[in-house]
Image 1 (cartoon, one colour):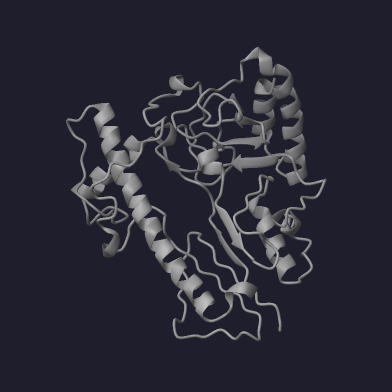
Image 2: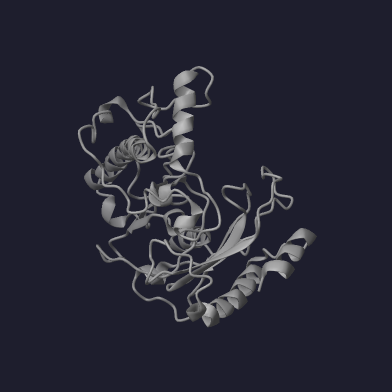
Length: 351
């Protein structure tokens, strides 16, 4: 029998599937199921409207981080109050706002800052989880079909997403940052023939590796245009000796509350350079911010609540990571060689 290959993943697109179709056990197949959820406006079906209704969800420890001074970070960030403003605008002008939020009207007027943040966090997090419950519900239908049709044991199932998301950590919502809540991506895979159940790996896997992995499973030679590398052996517990030890990250769309930045993360540390300029990037603000560095010890400070860049005990480590950062930029082809402004910024702020 031919190997049967299938996977589904959650990104930000929608694909309609013929619910009457059947899958042959004798032929390979590929099924991709893309959900718009859990994207803003975090909408959900009516059947989940009462989920968590009478509960207070646990609050992240950094929910009341109101300003950069709290942690030593270098920017304000996309604060929960920005989401409150969106809710209130949509409440005031429901026919003119760009999206339809559930559970409106919503206001925090006349509430103190702590109470207001608590209120918006509860609404946001519950809406987000209700939206996610709809994904779970529909994924369950796919998994049930694989089981009842006898396809489960010979089908590769993958669940992933395009990024993480802030659910109140640092007082934020949204994404786009090198902080772990945004940087880390969900990735769950089931393939009984090769992968032991209930296992986790801590290798540094990037989303550019996904296509290489899928090509490997499908028996296709990896195209030269693919930057990534198959992690099939990693999943079996056989991590190659030369597997990467560092991840490179770049977010190019600059705004003063969330400056353009790049950085690296390894298992122990994270270093980021917030260069704070639009350069020539589409959709960026023309208002520059003062370039700055952030450094986090991911063992001592896994929630990234203390920028330790100026701590002298890390001077040697930071120096080594800056060398590695330049190496990663070169290897990825992200050197900004055609942007003189970046050279000016780096000459002035690199050391």
